[in-house]
Length: 288
Image (cartoon, rainbow, N blue to C red; front, side):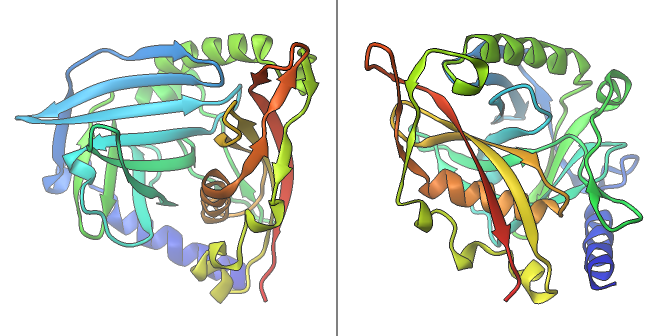
């Protein structure tokens, strides 16, 4: 009953923060100024697009580490400067529901403000009758119905990136991810990894301070299976949730912690060269 109550509180709060699409509620609107580009890099697929509002520019970046619905998302520009608090509301509108997400405030090498989120999906997890959380995979019709990405939070003016339908982009990313996993030097794909990545100081990766405060307050626990992509520098470059039946706050908190702290001796190929690889682990959050 307690889990049902807290999720209900979160759902109501997020729904209340969502913009009425007919009125737009004074959202700052950014129109696309470039087409989508999709690039396959060594360890991920990256999709980029630029948007403008008057003289202001915003950049949207989706990163995929394999054939999975979840992706990392970065928004760059003045629209995400000076953020406050631990949560941001995102919505792929007008039909998909908003969701509250943890995030990282950062800067690019050029000094631009950046808002980084891990484990994003186009539709948030929905609570089932048995208390578990189910994530839907959006079909082409629902992806095509997406019109915008809306961002809102305390201290940050509500704004929209007019993405238009995302079905064609999703198909291009899927093709890129399929090619990535066929050539990726990963032991689970039968690749040429001679020595897998070796974790360093793994006990420090997830700390008690990473437990979402609201979840701990209501005694909620979680067991989450994750796959990290480990780059040649020995750092996690992508966090992919493999199995979870909990609110996304736990997923966000875990990926944020692992991306910040996970360190490895990188995997090696037959020639002794460093190569990207995967690392799987399961983490338990227990209310104390």
